[in-house]
Amino acid sequence: MTEILRANNLEFEVLGRKILSIQEMALEKGQVYGIMGPNGAGKSTLLKLLSFLDSPTSGNLFFHEEKVSAKTITLEQRRKIAVALQQSLLLDTTVFQNIAVGLKIRKLPRKEIKEKVNEWLKKFNITHLADKHVYKLSGGEAQRVNLARAMILEPELLCLDEPFSALDFPTKIRLIDDFKSILASAGTTVLFVSHDLLEVKSLTDELFILMDGKLMQQGPTEHIIENPNECTRSFINEWKSYLTI
Image (cartoon, rainbow, N blue to C red; front, side):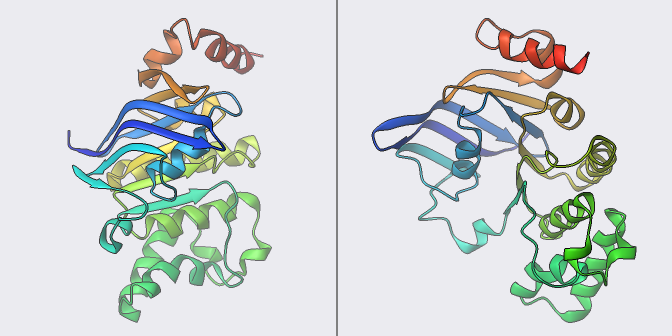
């Protein structure tokens, strides 16, 4: 597989307090990676660093083997990365216009924009919502628009920060199933922060367990869930017991 992102000796401090200390972490093309850990473990902070929204205090990030930082990333490199958050942060307009906004910024021809938006509306099963104002959407519908708006840009790396956490269970399962199929055909590399083991089991190939700002275990998702080490056992077993209640 082709490595697209690597972090070496990554550290992040706030007011002299070390929030993250990651010796090494690599993402390969087409894989879906989960990041789990207790509250305050540094999951969202790590996502911001790996998506070049913030800069580490020290250490290096390499994107396609080129050393990059939030300050030096080029527009061309930036366009290869998309981010979708728990709150969809949609614009005050229609579903169609929200999904089209990134393509408009890139000044694509109007006809091409229309074709691409219609394609992604269909993929996320929201064609019937194209002319609907986003303020009238349900939570699941809004998150489908949010993900379509990111995926239409055809990013090489998609960073997700708990996009399913506010959804009810049936809505969540339907969206994850649809999204998994979309990712399989798109070949997008995904970095997915979640606090929910069910989401991670359903969506990811590889899993990073982050505790106290450090990577305590990493590897195939199913292997880690079934074979936690001494550091992660308590955290993972607590989630496994929750799923069996």
